[in-house]
Length: 129
Image 1 (cartoon, rainbow, N blue to C red):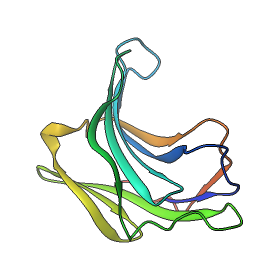
Image 2: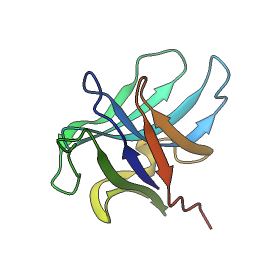
Image 3: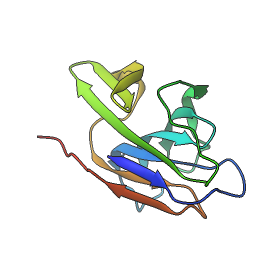
Image 4: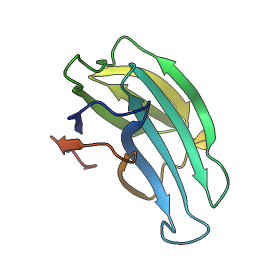
């Protein structure tokens, strides 16, 4: 999906994709998420119930990520692909990280995760075949 931050946030805040969702409305919710933020960094983490997020990959800069412009806008196309035992995380067509499926929640619901007070448009959505 292509995600466009339309205005500069007041502090570093992120947006991206969520996969492997289960029991999302309950106390035992689980999912993994892949985020980018305005400085050109990405982050991968697991959510498990009411615990703090468990980082799979801490904030990491990558040249494939378009940074926020002077106008506060930032557009990046994010993808998560599950291939056998690999989960591949890509930004703008470039693989930025790969994890074994055992390290993330890959089976379940998918969607978007957008931080508070962000104005983000989402388009060019491609779903699993």
